Structure formats: structure tokens, C-alpha cells
Image 1 (cartoon, rainbow, N blue to C red):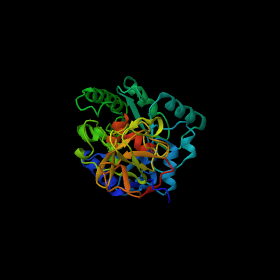
Image 2: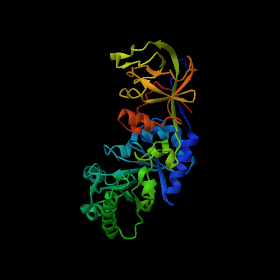
Image 3: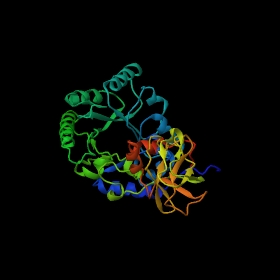
Image 4: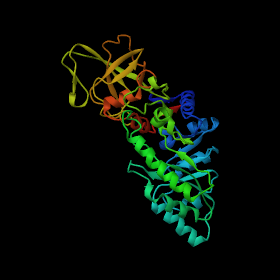
Length: 368
């Protein structure tokens, strides 16, 4: 490993964040969301930790479920977007897959397949309702009708009902309470049809787990909090008891003297206001560091915060080392992690920690 750019993944921190989610969930089961390659951390290593902790897993697609199963991880897997084509149900006959039904076209496909084949292979499903986010979800007004249709499908077992909070990260918002009201209406209608069938409830994402635990129901679905990034912009991860899981780091590969008035990088956007020492770090936007991070974005070197200067290049970025006199070529540089949070870097770049973590490219080796 010659180039020094790497992402160190602290699986102990992932486990501690998972344990915090469980503590907040008030007895509800936990489905650890590991989609998007475990938010950029590696889907298989985090899946194994979650399985060892007794948790379910939640993914976005069958391809992600296949990766988990091929790694011999046997924990139940919830497919958050369900199937994209009904043939997935037959092609991937893994144990303990649970499919979210969020649209009428999925239910129609199940009904059509049942008519054609006489019976579906045993399928476990959740009904997801749109309670105001208007992204995915069935209509609350159709809940009783949907329950009747599900109950008529041989081989299909309804496990529970879910929705997704739109504003759980906005702590002053009343919208989550409105969504809970809609969810309760859907549950009442379904239970009126499927009497005697125990159904689980699932509403909470990361922000919901931390701040709406009264609505934890039977299953929570924490995602970003497991990776040590804050689900609430107004509160730091550390203030919420979360620990950084990924440390994105590299090293200084050059240190240059820049005279007052001289400029640095493409476009010469940053000019030295004083005689300066400028360090070049082997990290750029091809590695996943945000190209639009402005001058002043903090970087950690030798126990000191130093500012990024100039434009981020494909493979390199520059930092002002004038106030870090001891810094030399080869010194370790933390781009984000324990000392500079990914959320702070994201805020400087006008984006979210989610995007930065999932955007770390494949050419950056993960060190566990």
C-alpha cells in the first residue's frame, strides 16, 4: 500500500453506537441499516458485527442481501425498497428475507404471480404507508383493502407495518406526531381485517431512535447514527453519545514555502496574506473528499487544526501549515474522524455526512 490515503474503520465504535441505539429503543428490536456498502464502511464487516449483536439487517436491494448471505451472515434481512421485479422472490431463495411492499404495483405483481403459479413460495412482507413524506408508501385510506388483498395471497405472510419519519431531525417540528396519527389509523384498519394476527410496528430512523423513542414500536431502523454521524444538524455526534467509526486519513507528500501574495492551486483561488508554509496532502475528490470544500475547512495534523487552502484537486489538496511549524513530509493527516467530525467537513462543503461517508471511493483501502 504505497499511497497513504486510507479509511480506518473502528468496528468497536460501530458496536458502541449500535448498543446506544438499542438502549434508546425501549425494548424494540433493531434492524441495522447497512445499505450503500455499510454507508461506505464495508457492508460485510458491519453486517457481521450487527449479527453478533443479535440485530436484523436492513438493505436497499437484493444485490446487497446477496453480498451479506454469500459472506455467510445469516441474520434476518429487511429489504427496504422491496423487490424491483417479482422474479427476485423466486431467484434468491435465501432464508429470513423480509420484503417491504410500498407500492400498489408490487402488490399487483404478487397477485399476478399467484394467479399464474397457483402459489408463491413463502414470502414475508411488511406494508409501508405514506404518512406525509410522499416518497414511498401505500395510502393510509386503503389500509383495510390492502390487508384483505394480502390475506388472500397464499404463501404471503404479513409481518408488520411501517412508515418513515420526514422531520424527526427537526426537533421543534410537530409533523412527526401527525405521521404517527396516520400510522395509527392504518394499523387500526389492518388489525380490524387481520384479527388475531400479531403485527409489528416500525417507524423510527436514527433521529427517531434518539428523539422519538416513545414511538419506537417493535422494530427501529437506525442508519447514520451507527456510523458516528449526527442525524440532527443542530447537535454534534459527540453530544449525542456517538463515536466516529471512519477516520479518513492520508499524509503530507510535500511542504512548500509560499511568499506573501503568491497563490495556490487551480484558479489561484487562495493567496497567502503572509509568508506561508503550504502542505500538500495525498487526498482529493477522486478519493471522496468533497471538491467544493472551501478554504478554511479544518484538517487535523499533529494535534493541530489547520485550514484547507485553495481548490481540492482530483488526487491532492493543500493546507496552510504556517501555524503548525513541526509538520513535515510523511506526517499523518486526518481529513475527518475523531478530531474533525465528518459532519463539520460536510457543513463546510454544503452537504451532509451521509454523502461524504458513502462517497469514499473504492480506491481508498478500508483498514479494519
